Image (tube, rainbow over all chains, first blue to last red; front, side, top):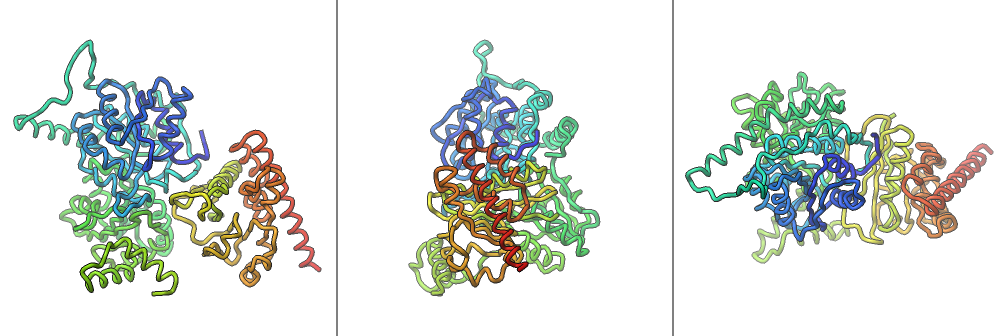
Length: 417
Length: 198
């Protein structure tokens, strides 16, 4: 059904259509309308049977999800930013135990400095946690990925994070096609757990494992994720058959035919990137894009194939690995190792800075001209940084960066500097 | 048609975000693609708030804030001299301000001289809302004026969107206010066209 609806509420509808039996969440910032809408659906019994558990922290949220999933219940939660970090220990437990929990991460920055806006720092920090990570390009894809995520998680017995840009997608009201309950019921089989805590057939889950088998358990987790590389496209294909929409999969190329330069990105920024590419193609530039939907497991072969022939690869990332630069770029470099492609890293949109079509136009034009350095910080206020570096160099007690920069900005705006 | 971009300025508590949503639902009701979203921040009552709406005949991919709006709706005239609400407004852009005063009285005489006279108007939205809704929250009322000024959406789509979102007396009060604002703007524009013809 076509609906003009907020991203968060649409995802809540999609999750409800998947009939989760336990939803647990900590209802304070950073949180979204997703669990708020779900709690209403549970209370009104539109989603039934389902238990909504208001927990005391994100750590408790993931712990309850683990417990619920281990008893064979379809379990769901959502968080972002500091909340995701706070549940980190339990996140690793969920994947280590192979429990098919589905979680939405409404991507936001991580403090300090305190910042509630969007970037990918939070989910990127969990890229090696053993969870599958899917990134939604649009709200429609966020809806569709959630339905696919439960099927993927339960088939492989592995937890899945569906990452969608906080605010940019979660708070946008757009035209979306919401599937019907019958469609989702037909697509998503009943949860048949591979392991279950059942009083009638007692087992223990979560035993201590020493050096004799720990590595083997970890290897199996890796092998399962490698299996996901085959299953994810298969689920996307079936989804398209059933729902008539291309959604999910490993990675998606856009106008890469004959492209000399290809931009690689994840999430909603692909919208502005595609608009920019259309404009540049009209000017005769041979440029295209590759959207990464599945970041974990890393679809190395698909990425290599999609980037084959590109002279320049521009990886635009919304997270910064302090001390080295890009995160996605490293994986892209692994994928194209041994080819002649030059990989550029662009760090953009940190802490909610808008990534505009205008800035992308300038950036990608200099990329095709071969003028892009190895690493670029898009729209970085160099003057502001230089003032602080100078202050730092001139005295020992230079004070905190964040407060200094904010004070400088006020002074500049008032014409005092 | 390309994307028509609208930026709405107001203060926390005035329904600015709801206005953008209602406009997007109105466009949706007419079979168009639309996208509405707020400026992101820690929302507080009384603090400046911005919301955006894009309307197009084809799917909208970009999600960035609107820097160069085709139309600007100012719900709170006290913002006029506080922040740069006019930033990026196109020369042929539309301007609708919620005020019973004229542009000259608002101290905007020089600024609006650079715009097209038939595309800008002040509208006593708060007065209309006080009368029809019972309180001076003019967000939905202004959309009626917006429909008459820009013709980007019809007044029927606006009132349908209002009834989608609200119910009972609140819905009907806002519908009456939007229709009154629509008629007000139509009348103003007729007078303006007449004055120009003379």
